[in-house]
Length: 241
Image (cartoon, rainbow, N blue to C red; front, top):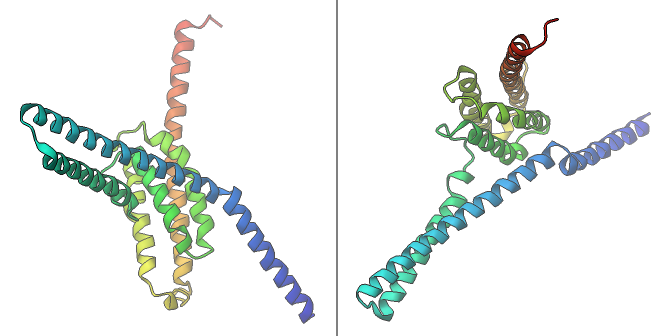
């Protein structure tokens, strides 16, 4: 019956809205939000520390100069203005400079790159279509294990290079190219019958699988190394039989 179908559709729509709210409060998005808040607090702390060091350095220089030659009130005010100006520049650069850009730098360590990639995904998630957002959540849920393994690996390691290229080049490039497509054209099917939104979901899914494979290979190395060490100790120090 038409009336029943409409009720079912409305009930499903309400259910999806409720689940979305739950996911945002308790699911992967909530975890990503907590990590982003922690990174923001750390960025504030570093910015304040650097600004305080500048003020301290200018103050010490001013005191030394004042002991050698009196600088007077004008010199003192000039030193204060210089210290505040430099501190403000450093503070705002640290807060709103590279750390806030929607990119993943290529010239940072493995652990830092994973954190920047996590921040990139969190900041761009809401701009993506609804079907793509759970895939992004799946990627972010893998990053904790990936970071734990990558931070002990040389950046030039082949597996680390694969993960770094995906995090800093391929996936951000996919998201950037999607953003360049006018919204009116994102639902138009291509020659294979897939829309831009569907292609995005496919690409994100492939990225999730690739990161999972890298994480698995790196973890298997640790398992193999542990087993080898265990067999060595057993053969050298274990009792016969």
